[in-house]
Image (cartoon, rainbow, N blue to C red; front, side, top):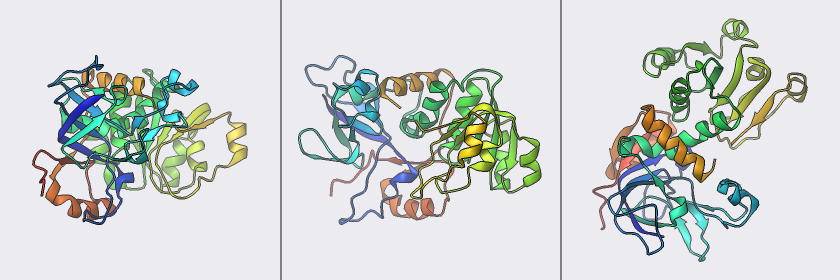
Length: 316
């Protein structure tokens, strides 16, 4: 056990965290936690007091199944989410709206000293959500062409990881005004306005892979048409609506549709981010601004991730 881990520095905020305004009657779920270890249990070997550490989407698993043995704890049938989940002792997990948290060593990540905590926190969900499928599917080599759908909390990190891996990156978005930032701020090589049929047609069959980060239902057929044969479409944008996948284009193109993360790979991702200066673009807010930020989040008014500074969290 890491007992306890101080999370007084930063708390990332995923779009899926929008669980209601902060009030005495609302359970607010939070993951993407970064902070400093203040004390460790007797069996802890990887951490000591003073180390920078992070917690992602999971805080437990059985440790004995085929998935846990493969470092795919997220696939374990007994996995425990960081928030709103029943832990192995029967207690409920409450996430990161706190100044301390107690977590098993296996589910705590070492954050390299060169990676600021506020920039690292969003990588613990948004970062691994895009990094993992790139590595798992081999969409991670110089010269490959990757499309990134959406330029929000996940999309901008996907662009930065892909460029660090040496790939050609084209951002696909329904917001033409994002073109300037996609290219000048994040280093994308090209931009497609998804509402412009002519732009889309010129890029058909040109991409080795696509990372789709859009969190609302949308047609997948136009994206499949952008892939080369045997291309990979990765869907990481969570939507309450079902995906509608055209079966014949999927079969004829020999394409692969997948969503993908594990503890070992998340740690590798953090080391890669530190080495290649991959950072999440964040807006740091105090805990007192949470309700305002929640309203802005619902409107999509954030560039590109809110991070809550909980160092001055009130105990009242």
